[in-house]
Image (cartoon, rainbow over all chains, first blue to last red; front, side, top):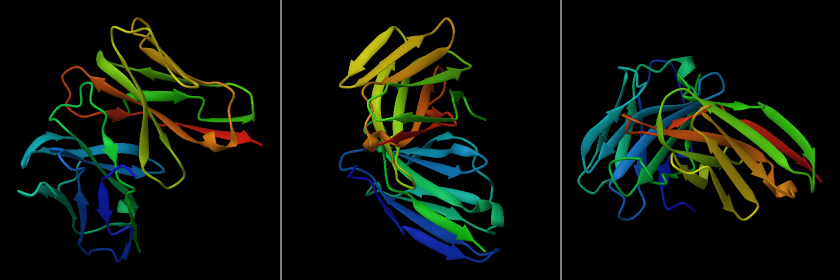
Length: 115
Length: 111
């Protein structure tokens, strides 16, 4: 158990809908990262937050947004969902703002299926 | 885009044999990490090697790094069926804040 908690574990929704994925980082970790894993794209970095502020942005679509709250949990909002958004979404956390030299700890992921 | 590319994409060996996976990357890095993922599960950190290190060991794992060739290898010795998983390299590239993962090697260890 990495200490990173993600909910829901599985989610099935229709195209055009909006979903929210939730992540609680390890106790004491200030950084939260979101990754998307799909068969064709592999593991793609979406976005990072550090202590409530956006720190780095990756291949995140405009239809997607995220935030980190004062209690450090984070939410990833996915809207206007398309079939291609079906993937495993991971949250990860680390103690500091940079990944240099830091291990990042992954949650078990949220499986999103768009039908 | 993927920073790291693992080779081979898939590897099947017998229990007790050694497994070697390679990772190539494109830009300068601060460090390189290897992660393991059991099917459909989260990634688990295995080992980190810094750019000024050439080799590192952890139990049955040996990692090498050649920054001149922009490549790394992960050796798992005396493999076990429980080592069956996907293995990813992740680079902490200079100027980037987040780890970039390769496409992974699927390792199957036959009992």
